Length: 165
Image (cartoon, rainbow, N blue to C red; front, side, top):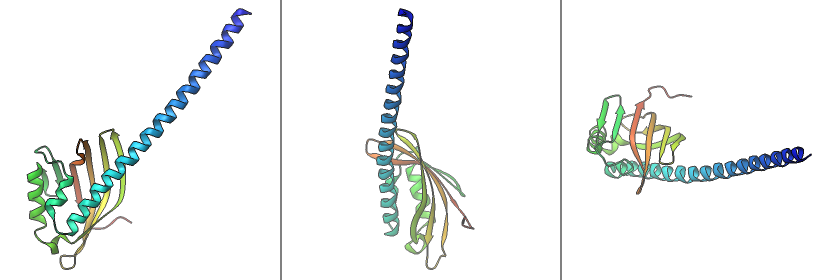
């Protein structure tokens, strides 16, 4: 009888612990979701600021969203540019004036958080240009969270000649 009672208490204790673990996991998941929502909003704010800077013709302000480091990388159809200065030079060479820059729009953003301080954002870009003709494509941005906020540490941008439906 004592053994049966012990087994019942042990089973009840295990059940109680299981319920506590489930509740703790739900609480942790909710906290992570809240953190991801805040981080998603912060990254979106950087992208909106970049879009606004581009549409004013301010390439320097556009690059504020990038990590100002010699370790920054940008990959595209013309190869890899390294360092913040190299990426800035690439943008200024490829977009020397407002007509070439056009009006930038980002769309179809997909976020994947890789760690509390790392994220990957996949999206589409489009430049509406009066004289140079519209262009667009896709991008993958790797973001890192620094004390001063989220910054792009790697950008892979491709031009797509035929847009996906």
